[in-house]
Length: 376
Image 1 (cartoon, rainbow, N blue to C red):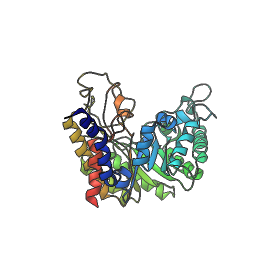
Image 2: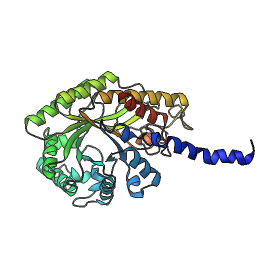
Image 3: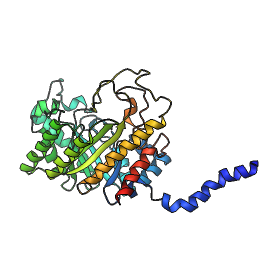
Image 4: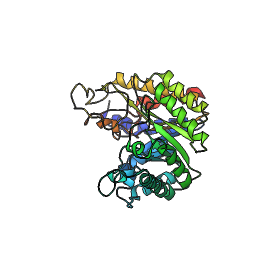
C-alpha cells in the first residue's frame, strides 16, 4: 500500500469509526450500565486524590459514581498523634467526590490495623483503661465524622472484627474495652452524624461461621436500638474461590436480617497463593520467587479470559440482589494501583481489576458490561 494512503488510514480511520459508533461507545461505561441497579464505586489512593492524574480522573468520572479512600481516613493517617489531625488529604478526597456528585464513603473508623500505639497506651507505655480507650474512640469518631457531617454519605464504622470461625478477633479494642466495643463505635458514629449510613465491613463473609456471627451482630445491634445500615462484603476473591453459592447464602442472610448489602473492596486473586488462604490479613508476608510470580511480563490471553468469565459470574449474582444491593466497589481503579501487587509477596504484578496499568479496559470490563446488557 502507498505510504501516504497507509498513513491516512492509520490517522483518520479511528476518527471515522468514532463518529459512526460514538453514540454506542458512549454507553459502555460501568456506572451507566448499572445505573438502574446499584452504584459502582472505586477506591482511591492518597496519591490519586492529591495528584489528580488526568488518566485516573477521566476513568473515575466516566465509570464510577461512588468513591472510597484506601488509606487517607484510617486512624494512623488522619490522627497520628494525640490531638493532632491531618485532614488535608481527606478534605481533598471529599471535595473530589463532591465535584463529580458521587456517593462518598468513609473508611474506616475502628480497625485493629493501622492504629497508632498511643491510642492504646498511657504515658508509661502501659495499656489504658476501658474508660480512657472509650473516650479516645469517641473523640476520634466525633472529630472525623463530625468534620464531614452531611458530606460523607456512609461510614465503615467497624472493620474486620470477626474471625473466620465466628469468634471476635482478639484485638486491643476487645481486650481493653470488652465485647461491647463494636456497639459503642456504632453509637458514637450515629451521634456524630445521625443521617450517615453506618456499615460493618469484613472479608471471607462467605464462610458459615463468620456469616452466622455477622447475622448475630446485626440482630444484637438492632435489638438494642443501635443503628446499622448495611454490611460491606469484601470481595477479595479469586478465580476458583469462593463458591458462588456461599456468596449467595451470605447475601441472602444479611438481606433477610433487614440490612442493606454492598460488595466492597472487589478485586480478583489470580496469582499463586503461597499459604493456600483466602484471607485479606495484611500482616502476612512471603518471599518472591519465579514460581510465585508467573506473569511478570504480562497476563496471558487465556488467563485474561478466565478473569473475565469469573467477573461475569460475580455480576450475574449481584444482579439477583439489585433490590437490596446498593453498591459494588472495586478496591482500586487500575492494575497499577492495586494492593495485591505487593501482598502477600512484595514485587509481584497481580492484574486484579477491570482496567490495566494505563487505565484501559480489559476483557473483564466488557464481560461485566455484558451482564448488565443481558439483564435489560
